[in-house]
Length: 538
Image 1 (cartoon, rainbow, N blue to C red):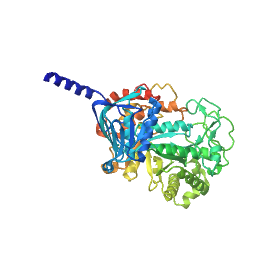
Image 2: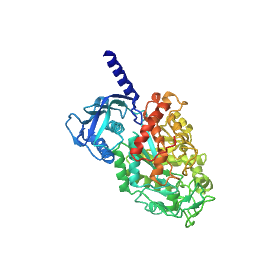
Image 3: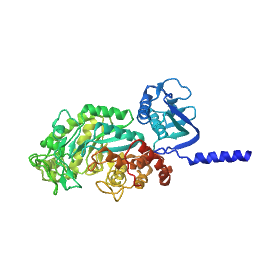
Image 4: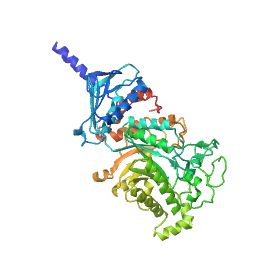
């Protein structure tokens, strides 16, 4: 009899061990237990305080959408309940730390912050079964978890193609479900100005519309000759900011300068060093409509007509930023700073005189002058700037945070100068790149397979331990030249976002590509259940 019991116990242990907790990103520690908790519409959600209601609401919205019922909210703990409670003893631990204990009789969620409670709810959601039922069996487990990096971001370019409010909310939910905490919202571009600025209505009336869009890969094989318009009102932006905040996600707006500014210049030509010159049309581009004067660009790429560093321009940008900072409470405002050709500055008498008057070395130093003026203004408003790594050229602004996109060299250089850095190199986290050598839809080019994303290490070996502390995290960028629909955006980010979320959350020493591959099929089944489009070729 003892031998039989021993064999049964061994079989049970082996079975538990064989089961996987397929939570993405992988928790710091997760242990399966015997039995399961049965969740039904009779289960009560117990709130530790009023602010835990945000997490409870998110869970209820998910249950309603995918399982057809919600849970009642209560205040008194009882058997069979889900308890969300703040444990102040965990408050000094790593930001976002939580514990999740699922037993046969209750679910206990504890964290030192409300953000941690929210992350625990995301893990709980991934333990739910993948079928609609009035009773949901959740495997008993104990999870202890916290993030590795404090900045875990995903960007969306709405300048090239405009996306609806509903999709932006959906995108924010996808960020939340993967325990990421930053939405970088790219709102202005050569091809469209997407944010309402009340003092300058032409920015959206003129800059928010282009008369057509090239077809095919840049420079294109034609033009759809369809007016492409869209922008977010300030009321809509307030709604989105609150929506994100309820999910513990910070939105960082990007207002591009001094380059990528064709849409603003089309609206207010005086922003150009040569306001009377017509907009440059790239060779080979089929143009739709008028070519007279300043126009919103209809093709992709980089353009020479950039902001003139005049007092008119600085006054304009300060007015714009005044309205932006009223809408976005984030510490950071992203000011772009990338891909700014100096051709017009070189031939501008005004710019050449400005260089001499300020004792600047060259046009690169003039860009630094431009960026530092904007930084000083935003600092006076209690905000800090983020810029792409080009802002290092000519002398970096004193308090700037650098996004290193042209490889890692810019980030390494900035960290050595003790600037905070967000890693976002093209070679690892540009999700507009192809996922296969035989893409079945049009993409910008490049090749970024899933394993390369998963094996990315955001802290370069070139940095000392102390310098490495200036790398505060990383983000993926989604540039939308060739993405017109939300389903295409989903297809391009998944499952690569799955991999990146684990890079940014899970401990470096426990990351394992083979183990990730074993867990991935279960995660993809969940994406199917959530009706998420994803690349299926891995």
